Image (tube, rainbow, N blue to C red; front, side, top):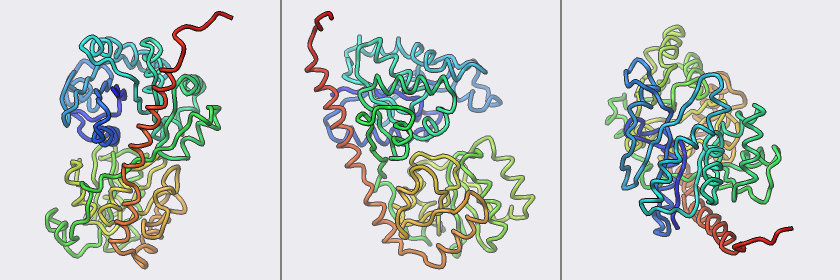
Length: 402
């Protein structure tokens, strides 16, 4: 089976952890030996690589083609216009990628189906490509694409049209597929395939060894917050809670546009000496930060299925997380951690206190994570893809006119 993975959520040499969960799912699928794949990961066109342009400069610096973990990855450009960009993005993304996809076909990679990730604009663009090229496709929803974007009428219309056209839609949590069904999608074409966790990469390391390796005080206690430094991830809530958690040090792993504001907040609240900024941490090094922490917190306002929760648990570290979307499907037992009552500093402080008063054994937290291997998701993908291709093979070569 030959698959073309299509998504703007895919790592590159310039943004190595961007969309890492999409790459991980594909990597697990390839391990079966039943699939060949190439990746088309569009990026917005931008004329300058000057660092002052921030993320836009990274778009410009992204290579047109690269090899990642033995996979061929292509990054065609598409036009993302200000103001009207949201409505036009699926069309410009599809048009921008079309020549690259056709070239891959000419070079011998005549794929069987398109595996698209993120419903809007990526999934809608994949639907256009599938229509132009006569290929089946699946779209995986991952969070904001269904719990925020459908609030806008035109994108919602395109999302539903795409869901009707697709061979199937996949949600990384049941809540996302429930939402798509409520919007009007056909229930029989909706599938939940949760993200797994790499149980070989994320393993518990001795806490004192991890802290020493990272140059941290071996005594602790430490609360860890991982993610892009934007409001949605809620790092500011963790900093606010720190003011009422004496003796606790907050570790923040990530970078982003809110870094300056977060540092100013820590200074204003008088906790600047108890916040440790780790910057961007490679996936291969994250296990040391998870293992060093007494707990991970995720104060997001929106998450489909947050990989960091399972990664922390796989390292034996329980979590404190906002009670949203797919998170209750992950934090489902006391050994996993606790859910916050509200998305605020008071609830985080209570979650920390409750967790520390009844902390689970690290081995039990690891056992909880082991329930979320990639095996079920991988077999689910193969089953869905195979059924779609089988159904197409049984379609008549011609249809009688009515």
